[in-house]
Length: 197
Image (cartoon, rainbow, N blue to C red; front, side, top):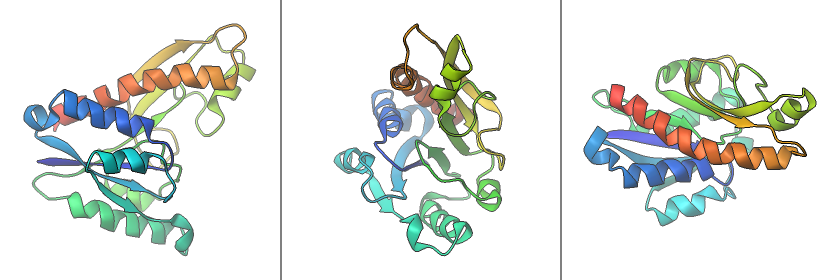
């Protein structure tokens, strides 16, 4: 059974979308895969409540208790490796995980580390994507699922969704419409990755 480990920092709505899709579409039967664990760098992350209700394994690693980024990433890898086997390499899914990962960590899970970003990459990597799109006068915005590389918000694109920018949009209204698309494309992109493994 392939294990999926999802990393979150907040509400975990993309994590919840993936978990629901995995249950509804019977990923265990179809792909031999399951969401095995949710890991957060914040004990107060709202998504942990949903994960607990689903009976998932939960791990909290407070990044503030580690000396540096490398030490945190090493501890994070130890937790992920609880679900990793040579026969069934773990798939690591970043779902609102607000930590920049070290090149060593990214390299360790190369090709099986996935992220979603709320813009049409390569445009507007980093933070404040919706406001930046509005400030630039974009007619369209969206979301991108991509494989993670050491360069922030880069890597091969797996899936994108386009959302029109409407007159009177604010960063919040645009973000809400983009998020509904994220919940559609992220489970689909993860399922597609599983089908190829």
